[in-house]
Image 1 (cartoon, helix red, strand yellow):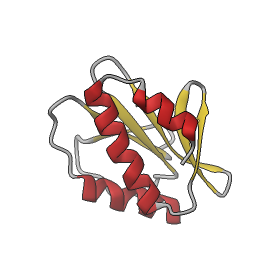
Image 2 (cartoon, rainbow, N blue to C red):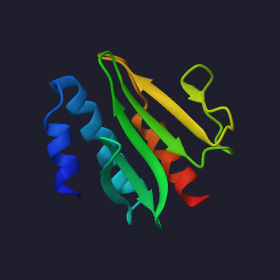
Image 3 (spheres, rainbow, N blue to C red):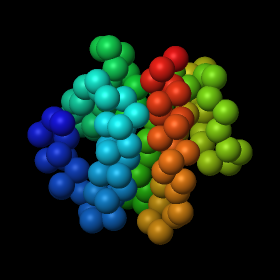
Length: 113
């Protein structure tokens, strides 16, 4: 785990830090050889030198973008797709119920593709 990413998450509001920590743990489990770095002022996660995802805290939510997601089957209304379809983003708001097991499966599937 990259200490810069830890420091970044520790500097967030408590509810954002909790969500980011949970997602980071999921990423670590789903992509055992993941590389972490701060890039463009946000935590990025890479597998084999290629982007696997990025955390994006904002004022009212925390987003997580899954890269290489063109073949993922995601629940309707839960994710936004990029114009090219190769990225899918979930926005998690305070108090929102999230199926983290499902998110972990999607992250692992995209990382394995």
